[in-house]
Length: 387
Ligand SMILES: Cc1ncc(COP(=O)(O)O)c(C=O)c1O
Image 1: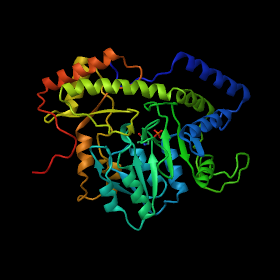
Image 2: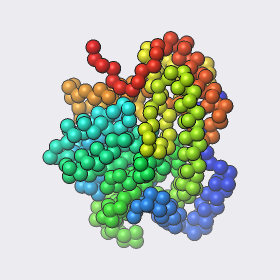
Image 3: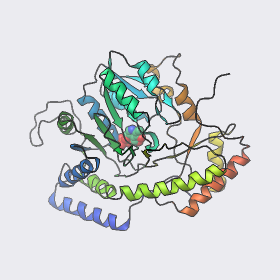
Image 4: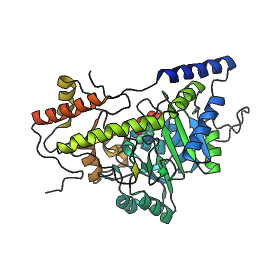
């Protein structure tokens, strides 16, 4: 394939440095919860200017640990309908009841008006997800809502390493935030996650939960129903090296995004607008499908005839249509913004290793494929008004 949907970048110097660290860990025998993990936590906390960063084995466990620390069991957690399975699953695993909230297609994030409609006496927390790396410009409204209602604002920042809004970093808006280092993410570790928080109690609970609920590393004395959610030292070594590249990776993603913006604007193709004040890491580059274009056909044509792989959508099926969550909704559940969004967008390939020439080729191929599929004029983001 000429342009694959994604490619991870591990520069040669970084690979050598990672191998040297792993070698040292093997010699010392400290292969989990060791000095590399602590160095990573310190670097991550420093970068986010927060008091605590706690490394764990996935973004999912990071989120579940936060929610367990907030004691959401038996209470309600508001989750956007347009997010990855794990956001809702983490809340359910923590014992909460999940309510799906509609999304604003212009930001891809939770719609504050729908969140305000759904919040009730039993609501413990609201999870905002920075879809595609964009922090919604509605954050002040969401913060005000949570403050007024006395509920916790939690960030699922799995997509948003290095993103910011008006100078505030993703991960610093809520009471705590989770990050993921899954291989598709802006920085990757194979597997891994991170909790960031300024709350001393959440950080302490996280240290206990991630290590089988043990009160201390050396004692078999269990005070919480924890899990093996530890980050191993080899994973920490990879994430630490990737963290050192974060700004460089984002700069290249932003450069490519500007190139896409300009080329697509001349073709009249609608893209997700990044408002002033938002520093987007472009985890995804989102394009809205013109009327009449069927996504599966478009993706297949691009793959088979142009050798261009589109990256995965964020997301193609809203959570209230996932069979595993069917019991959480009834037939009257209508989440029109999320449904429109999930059905009507694609994500162009965008990663630091993508060349300018290949980015140009993606746009040419995309335009040609749309033409062949008989695309009508572009539409802006938003649910199509019912007629
Ligand atoms: C929005 C969102 N939340 C949570 C997760 C879970 O992260 P992990 O795969 O590291 O468990 C992901 C990962 O894909 C994600 O995209």
